[in-house]
Image (tube, rainbow, N blue to C red; front, top):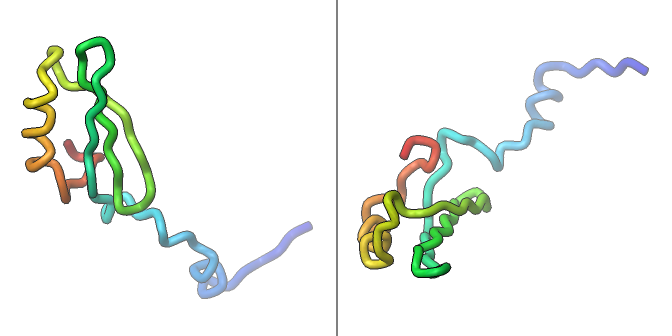
Length: 77
């Protein structure tokens, strides 16, 4: 079954809620697991990511990074 759409119809069906170029970090939370900080990053598009602090740095260091990454695109840090 073949269905053809005009360019306008196709554009109306595009999900515009996910635009990597407009993706921004909105919050960062820290949880300690076995004395190592686990980082949880939230974005303006509902995506959530997990990570760790390089070289086993402290929770205090991870929280200092928060002020530097808020508003940044997580694809570019």
